[in-house]
Length: 388
Ligand code: TRP
Image (cartoon, rainbow, N blue to C red):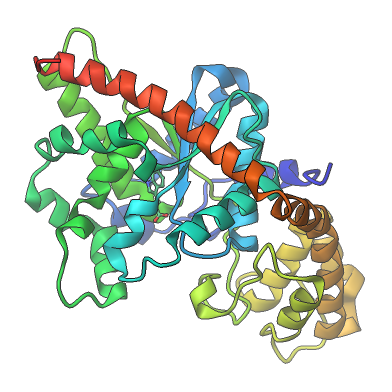
């Protein structure tokens, strides 16, 4: 299969304690989230969790999710999607959430939500997230009323001040240049807690920016259990699983690959489009290709991507290209990436011809998620002494 290089990626990711973007961890990194949790503690817990996942995959429930806002790209692929495939194939109970309500929190456009939801399904399924597996459920949270109802008790367990302090929300408010802060924006981390806790998810693979939300989720779980069901806790305190695997930089050399910055390669891009985008990628003026992530981040980024796609170690790629220069490196990258993406793109084309099946898969995931949500909400209402 074409996932042959997953192991290389994740062994590399777990082999050293690094910041999420692959740099060695600095004191700044460690103190960033201090009011919520220390970054170092999260990294340590992640490593322990990863070991236990290998040993007892069935003892865990993993929840991951994305907002349906656009095409997933190779940053998502190597950073998180292949990890989801890996965990699902290990047998871990996997819930994959399409967070459609969250799209409303920071943008006014909603006309494409349905289209983006199905597009996200295609991205997921084409990379090998297989909804036909018994342990995999892909669902959208707007389809699960009982999940959303958990918001009501959860909101009473956090203070407005806590929500206002959330560093990720603060950044998003700035980035979205919201002139008027809607309450949904402030509350969405509580919604996210409902996303995670409705299925008693105990592991949430995340990037560093999501850690404050995980910490809030842990607090909500703890407070709910302590207040309403101390003898028989309903919720686990979920842990973030930091995938400090590759953070792929934008092809323009900027810190993040993102569709809005036009510096990414969408999974569904054609081979020609892929080749064209790679031709425009930023490099530097040195002819000899070497792998020096600190000194030559743009060149190293291209070598990294080529390495994830081909399974060939970075140093070997650099040595092989040598004085072939950036042109030859880009050619190598184009070929290895297109080769890696070819079966994914073929699968996508097949699925696109059968959207009825794709929709059925989503409906099945929604049904499974709903069954679980109904049970959880019943337990929650019983614990709160509510009539039902
Ligand atoms: N907030 C996440 C993002 O912007 C998406 C998301 C919603 C999510 N609910 C979640 C991620 C629950 C993990 C767990 O990408």
